[in-house]
Image 1: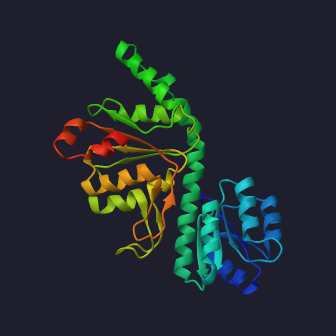
Image 2 (image 1 turned 120 degrees about the vertical axis):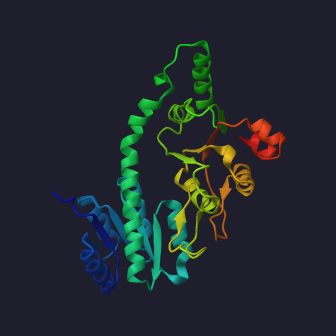
Image 3 (image 1 turned 45 degrees about the vertical axis):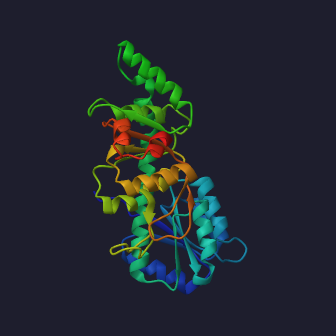
Length: 307
């Protein structure tokens, strides 16, 4: 049995644009409805659920921000793409800060729309799956469920409980296979960020030339193959925890960039010109003796103490 088609709502006061998008996305296999203004769009949203809303910003009476706010308040699993004229991209950026997934500028290319819609729906699926798993993970990884009766393990449990109640960054050290990620998850899911993302990354498993984009994201056209804007893991983890496994493998230049993020609580995408605030708790782990790495000049002392 095939999966039901994604449901998309198009909200725009320009009839020709509604029809164009509706026909194109229907041909792509999506189930599409349209609304001629923000008020109609909100009424459609009240009547039935949608996976994606594509809404113009500038509309009479109820504008795109009104539609966006309704979605954020009443349909958290629905993703929103804003439509804007090239001259008003500042409003679109403001909408993204409020919670919109992305924006497209008029005039736009068909392939651009297809790609943004595809990526937005993938994000929607990840968001919904993440929401379903959070409670299960919270129960599973709470420090109360860590097993161990030795005095040393009881000290670990006590420390996890104390650290979980704070907002400080954490460095976990230990041999491979000793459960460092499990401890990191226990800290996250026992604290006040438990309902926000826990995002792990192995710093030693990603090539150096890709690691910066993976952590901080990139802008469209910033390098060969960057055909679309991409959020980095710091942005994905906003409100929650970023787990940097094998932090001792971080290349020197990335150590500098990570230190700046920890100091300023801001990131800048590759190819970007604006700093983006990120409220993220960082938990790092390593099987190396970082104090020795510092003394031998392979790991920055200031970053070590920041962690």
